[in-house]
Image (cartoon, rainbow, N blue to C red):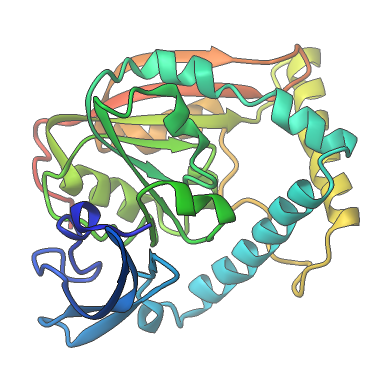
Length: 291
């Protein structure tokens, strides 16, 4: 939900040096329920509806890659809604049990500061931190009912609507495989991190190195197929994941932009897909976003 504290941090997603100006607002106590956010530099207007600022630059999402990504997102949302509707399903129970949020929170060693959770979903990761010490903000292109409970913006990882040097920590849990442009995401993270800020990634790893890893891959495949059967989407050919990472490909992706501070892995069961935990700091020689 949008309040004045969050409003003060919001900048234009396509011109991040331009602060957004609120007009025509309707308020309920300290919450901004309806209104418009104006980017004067680009002559753009973004709606605030039911307390959620929609900062997705739709006018930039017209090429074929973005259209494919939107089909992908629609399928992802349908599968997520199916899990909520039928929590008793075996595949849903397996997914819920395997979520390592508490272990990942301990791994990040975040004690205080301003945190941006990109791909936040229902924002459950915030429950691992003291709200008096950690100011949590969620960002996601999908609006879930739970976003009423915390500071949230509807936005894209490639167009982060905040000023330079805003966050002490950026986190992304099982989300970067759904981003359209991974390099742009990394550049944006570097831009919004404070000096000495850190990026923390939790991401599933899929690779075959022997019988156990083959079983993990099979579990991942079966999960996707079971969800396909239960979910109706317009474009069945849209990819379920934009990226599939091995340990090597994940590290190759981040090493272009970041130095690794810490690494670990987690598996709920021996057959569960391995989760990579990584804490990163922008390379000193980058300094500014890569063009």
